[in-house]
Length: 94
Image (cartoon, rainbow, N blue to C red):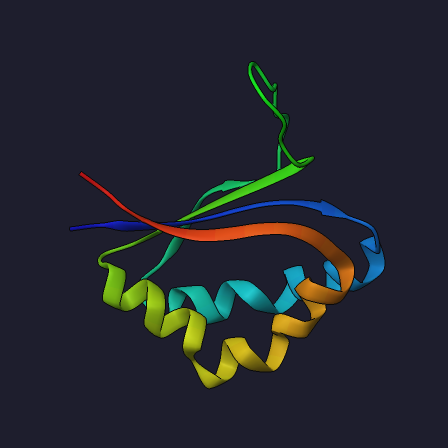
């Protein structure tokens, strides 16, 4: 079953986030993941939402968790955490 990593965040340091953006894709593809959404215009219809949304697709929850916990991703996670605030979840597909 596919799994999706969804990040909803507000960037407060665009320069640091740009550095993160340059290196994160390689960590994702190494675990058979791909971007489905990477920023873009977001229209909030109900409730509250952060300014930026990213959705990644992985072939399974195990691959998504392996990506997140990988040494390569853990080396760069600080760039995201220091440049934005928000939430990140893994959701099982149907």
